[in-house]
Length: 283
Length: 283
DNA sequence: CCATCTTTGTGCACACGTTCACAAACGCAT
DNA sequence: ATGCGTTTGTGAACGTGTGCACAAAGATGG
Image (tube, rainbow over all chains, first blue to last red; front, side):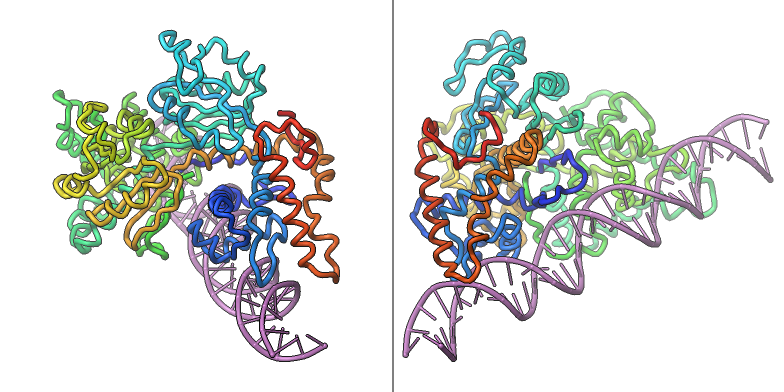
């Protein structure tokens, strides 16, 4: 999940809940599809089904925008498309820059969904001189040296970071210094930004790990609680033997256990005895 | 943001809160970095800073896993890495398939973060015969016809969908039918799946739209509330004139207004006098 | 104009998530 | 041993999000 850091602690006066904002694009997509089929009106039930949410939730969401429905009939599709677009700020053009034109950056540049809703790729930027000038998705890749000029000339306020993790913070700092106030970060790093700058993160690895967690849980259920019970001894091992004796020993034991486990599981690649590296990271 | 649909309404008995699960990968990454620098222990304050979260939140998160810290000292890095890895199910290998080897699919296949933590790309699948057999990221692309066989032979339980929106649901159905129970969906569609199957969605367009919302809000604040007030007349226009008269007229008027605006704004470049669009951003 | 049917908008209760604040637990020095 | 400084683990208060259930508002037909 990409977690947005809301730059303002409390919700604003006429503020729309963050959860609602996150769903508006979903509604908008469903409504656009209806609009293309020339469907004039839609009920909350139908639209909710199309967007994959609860109908009550949808109605409450819309109630934050105003009373845009007609009881007994539903919502006017065209009007709602306009209202949501306006609320999301999509009635204007947002120039964005993509920094880091590797595999992912190129994919993003080619992604049609970008251009489709008020977002215009103003420039592609990369630090590799070998890439400079090459065409990607119809745009020439420009060098990082030009970053500040590009931001200012195009009045870019949204930046997409698709660089390796190591370069992300520096790129971020430069973007912010040049005037960017919203960042979509694909690099697996926590970016630190000044107040007033929004960062949203998209992390493929994290999404997979969350899926793995649920997957494991499902597998555990299928096998019954036996598995969990079997590993419980080791699992909570540090807990039971701690009664009055030195907890330091327990802690030491835990560390030793971890080392042992790591070493045992560490043979994915690793030839040497580097038991310190957790077994989960082969590369 | 990728929103996970929890396949179970209530949290399980010893269930770990979903919000906590979503943060565990974050902690794990920070801990791994510390581990590589051979840092033996870390305090909740330090680790929280590295992960970009509140220290109290971090401690509460860890408390769901058990009492793994030592008061007055902090957490043993190695042990914590192991515990979180185990909790997330990363101590085992998860074979995944990527379906749809376009720009994005290829980027995902090449993405190092995939392979790095217990996830192994078992196969790349695409419906285009022209791609079949070609090497991407060291793996041969295989045809969709083989999908079911691949899933069964490799015991794949996690699938990544990077196809165009139109093909996503069909691919999803086939994956699920073949035994996949967790899906990471990059296609801009709402997937419907049977109970017991987890879907997480990553939608670049939605992330941008959320950023645009906040960006617009920031711009509006800078210009003062004058802009909001100016457009308020039209904004809530359907509300004020409605007193006792037919609301149908108001609805009709709204529709007409929307149509007019849509028509005026329909040309994406909009040279004319578009006074309807809130002027919160000087483009 | 009235009755009936449909659908919105929302008050309310509950679940979930976050943050504060502090006692208990630990290492360490004396 | 004892006391002191540090850090965890968690109870409790608070804020946010969700879903039910229903009254109000409109459409429709007679």
